[in-house]
Length: 104
Image 1 (cartoon, rainbow, N blue to C red):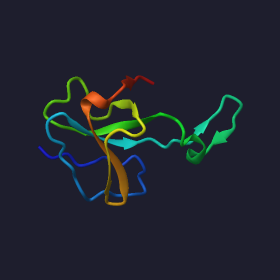
Image 2: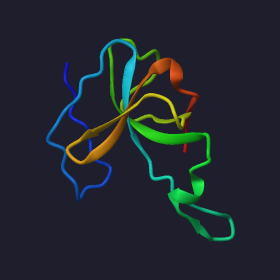
Image 3: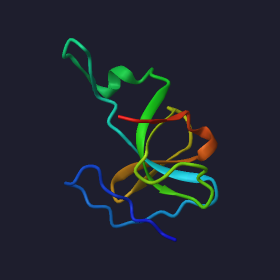
Image 4: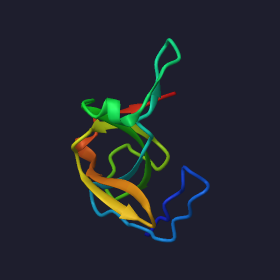
């Protein structure tokens, strides 16, 4: 089963697809830019020392163990593999590398 990657930024189109196998999942990282409680916006470069990132699951292998497409997840910054599809960067990592699911 092949899944087309949904685009978080509607101005870019992905015409490629990636089908993860077994326990692998594909994640589109969420922008690391964040706003502090005081309203200051911190760019991603200032957050390069942060050990974890968040992202949206765009595809899952046959053994996702409770993770579904569309889930927002937390994972180690250095986990998995960086892959570029149609100009969009995604992460491919094993389900066991995830730290948790985020419920907003």
